[in-house]
Length: 350
Ligand code: 8YV
Image 1 (cartoon, rainbow, N blue to C red):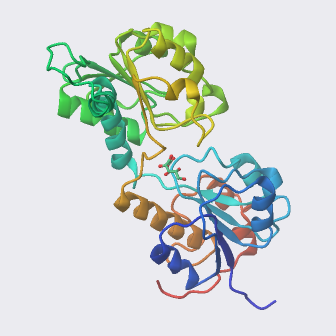
Image 2: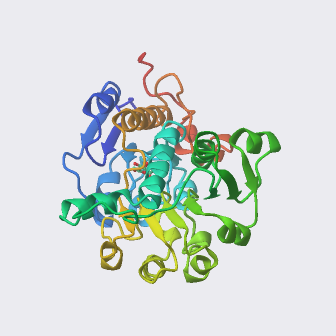
């Protein structure tokens, strides 16, 4: 059978010049408007392609790939990939990749910005001033909580967690406590000035808690009413991970009744819908999932995803070995569709 150019689908507008690199090797179908694709639309788009470049908007599991016989590779633009059912993709021999590293510092920057904004009541102050409330300077207006010298807690100590710890320890002289599935090696802990503690100890002892753990079924609503009740009433909670980690109604209740001083969320359980109970509060900062949203970082993420996609389709310098394969075991055990095909599609230099 004669070689044909692979077909790829790009699920939403990204950066045209970066995505154009795909067109040198592949026939590209690019969605031109930002839209949430239904399960049926995803299945229809994936039915006829070899690869896809997708984002967290695209929830892809067994049903969406059931009629996609040519599909070999899904490149997710993002480090989190809870939108993909990796078990279902692996069972079908479809590789998946993500974009770690390039977004670490940008996302840590946002986490820290949200922490400062919430603890020092910056957004609330801005709104209060614009609303014409500043009649007279007063000693007690908008009293908040200090970051310097306080205790920072981090739940989830991967790359982004460590980058936040570094900021807190080296930049703000904070004591840093963390909890994670596994304890870091001693030299890594020292580099970011962080000490491992149990989950309950973390909740009870920190002045500020930042959530940076990957979302799984096991940690669904791990920050619930009981967890919030263990925290200091003066504490700040920041979530830059995934919305499902926090019970949003319990959080809104704690904030409304003075059991937690402040919070900041960049992620929500049912994006883009934000609960009215959260919107009604003044002691919470709400941003629309912009953790990695600097221009340079978003461009870098798309480049990494494009490189992964081409590699997964057997094209370019890393042909057959996408650098960020999530289910890389498929390459080792020969069950990846690309490996089973056993051929390189094109060898054009990039
Ligand atoms: C991305 C994110 O912008 O990387 C992640 O996990 O949450 C964001 O940085 C998002 O995933 C885009 O798909």
